[in-house]
Image 1 (cartoon, one colour):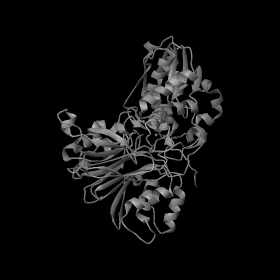
Image 2: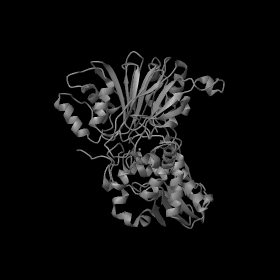
Image 3: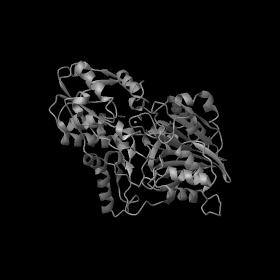
Amino acid sequence: MREPAPPGYWLPRAARRCWLRAAQAGARGSRHTGRGTGSVERDPAATCRPRHGAGGAGHPGGVRRVRLHRLRRVAHRAGRAPCDHAGAGGAAAQGMGLINHVFNADSLKKLYVSNLGIGHTRYSTSGISELQNCQPFVVETLHGKIAVAHNGELTNAIQLRRKLMRHGVGLSTSSDSELITQLLAFTPPLENDDTADWVARIKNLMNETPTSYSLLIMHKDIIYAVRDPYGNRPLCIGRLIPVGDMNGKGKDNSETEGWVVSSESCSFLSIGAEYYREVLPGEIVKISRYDVQTLDVVPRREGDPSAFCIFEYVYFARPDSIFEGQMVYSVRRRCGQQLAIEAPVEADLVSTVPESATPAALGYAQKCGIPYVEVLCKNRYVGRTFIQPNMRLRQLGVAKKFGVLSDNFKGKRVVIIDDSIVRGNTISPIIKLLRESGAKEVHIRVASPPIRFPCYMGINIPTKEELIANRPEFHDLANYIGADSVVYLSVEGLVSSVQESIKARQENENGLKKKSRVGKIGHCTACLTGEYPVQLEW
């Protein structure tokens, strides 16, 4: 499996053209294309589909569009609701399809006038794929318009939907994101005191629903960046660098052109921004033209660890993104090294299913002392197969997606590293392709544990029955997919690979007597273990 996000930001008129060019470019590389907050991303498929990516930005001179979440190239929805500093109701453009189709020259013209904006790319999770579910959502309130972009999925959405409807609030879509927008507009800080205290409204929302959401909320000339108390979905802040500093002509890099917010940090470099920091779990950050300010941190239930989605590391994120102070690439490489310890095999070469498993394959090869050799080449103009809506399209996608470098492996024993196997519909034709092209043996090593349970926090894993790990064939999986052997990384191995660097940093901070700002560190492994970080409410 393989996939980041759109941004929110402040920027100058000259800078905004970069943003617009990035938007027109389409997607971020491979989820390695791009993701945002509300975020599009970051992007999670018909097998295992990521939720959304969102981003925002702002600058006194005018808003340019930062490259939105590397698009997951199937039918995702992209929407952008920019505004000038006077209000959140300025120009807007949205539609279904790839970013460079939705944001054409005509639709982008009206976005040039803004100095503040948020954007979003979406795969349906709780809502169906219709234009009406496109984000950001914009509503008029007594205190002005607000625009909201959301990445995630509320675990108690049904109860919250009923609450609003009991109070006479109608909902026109099936999206959790509209629900969040209406809750912010509906719920005053005090029942009989309908003031414009948006921070109090945001805190009320966070106390009503524990997870899963990263939010960008735009009101007048302010963007609020919000992450749920469990930190389940990513959200980070970037600093726009003055042009003189980018060219090495500035005296220092202390000046800031503006601020951007995105689901993944990988989106920053292409728009002339640098990674500043993550939004912490439970944190409410106010982003204005000139500064970034923490307004409050809403705690999670006492004793609970944080619950950042571990599958961001495995599959969804781009390898050059930074989460929890570490690069995704480094974590994936450690997963490959741990997999080599747990599941060695006699072979002549190690390779991968491009591209998100490449770091793990390199780690496996290094640890085993077996050369890494490419055996497949990827057609970059074919979308990701796992997000195709039905099995036939997914299988046809596999056939079109890869070419074979047969001279590299004829007559040899090959170890293929994949990041995950969800349904088994992608890896099986690849194995067949390698055997028909001359591979003597094909061994599969998976750099993550089997996915056994659905996700209710922003990733579309439709049913337990569709997951290969829950089907009878799993007991003889090697024979079913045509491999000589198949071994997955253990849950313990994955968690240790992810947390190794985090724990080392915490120990260093403890030695320096620094107080942790995030509390007990943990990760959501619900799709692997069935242990959800919060109680699910239906």
